[in-house]
Length: 274
Image 1 (tube, rainbow, N blue to C red):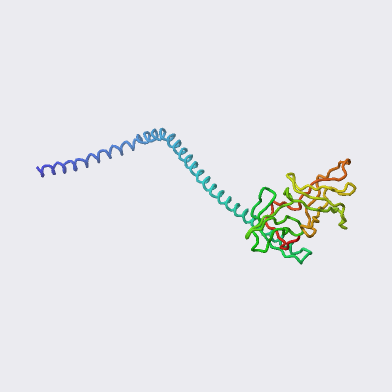
Image 2: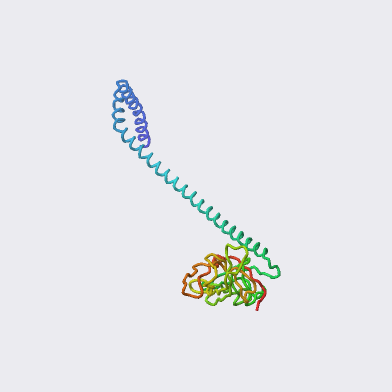
């Protein structure tokens, strides 16, 4: 039985050879006649639009994914640029702080009065808009009553000294009361135009008791001349001066020479003046 099966397989294999040969002759004959050319042209005519449509779709998909890739790369570059800009801004802020600190220190060293000792301090916080906390205290020789300045500008008075920090009362505080005088801003002779009183309020620093007969004008300089301070320091400029002729004195406000809320560093004169 096994031999019979093998004989059948061999006969089928031999039979396939002439069949393939005949089919080859038929295809060759039809090819000579040009029949397959017509068939291929017909198939090409049908398939070409499909090919073109498919090709266009493939190109569109390729362009779409290419655009997505470009957008992704652009976002990565944009994010990297934002990080660099943020770094530059931080560096610029640090530079500005160092520059301001250096300027304040130079101004303090240039003071005419070299007999006083100053402690440089950093502003930590503001309290209720009329006081601020600095990072120096009793351990640095600071005591209650010491004067806080920047150069020849009056900033405030130490009202509470802790071991490591101190509280400064600013001129805008309702508890602040200072004797002052006013000099003409445009007069180099520094003649005193009028004495006055500066006090803190919810509206700012008020200045009152200005002589009605004085030539005080808006923009004139207000100088602290108070026993609590002990030396002449600039408070600010006169603004909002009243013009009521029915009163015996004039009043207005003082625009501080510095913005207290922008202060980074201050100097404390460690000499308690009674």
